[in-house]
Image (tube, rainbow, N blue to C red):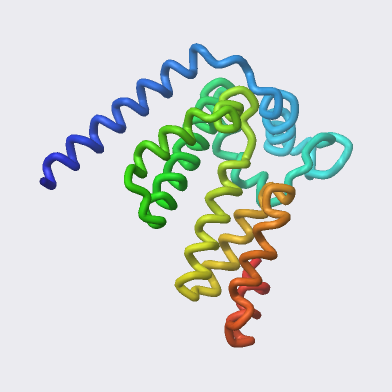
Length: 193
């Protein structure tokens, strides 16, 4: 049984690398990465920008969003975009699968596949953004609230807030779920971010 999982994971990685190489050649340049993320990060790395100055107009993410983008903008722009797209799709399908399995869905793999093929997810192919990271933060915070882990909840809320408009309703809902926690635990949630 364990050997089957090893083979499955190895084939998954080979498939992922194949998709990565194909996307590198086939994807059109994403507007967010090309117009804002890439040039602003390059200016910052060259010491020409301090973020949120005239040289970084169009960068509307919170400062920690910059640190998430840094690995993807340190490579060639096409490799960076491909990496951001592949990791974003992996996050979206992984979170979908995990939530479907946790909810007791009969075929969580099918749900993850359908999520990966829906139009919103496919838009990630053409305009890579950090929305998937916000989804990951929301899911981790949801799990942390359910298991009463205040430090993880605070850190995950920080990740979810990388796209504030995505987390506008989920963060208050998560905090509402923690409303009966002891005051010290609530303080840890707020102080961590």
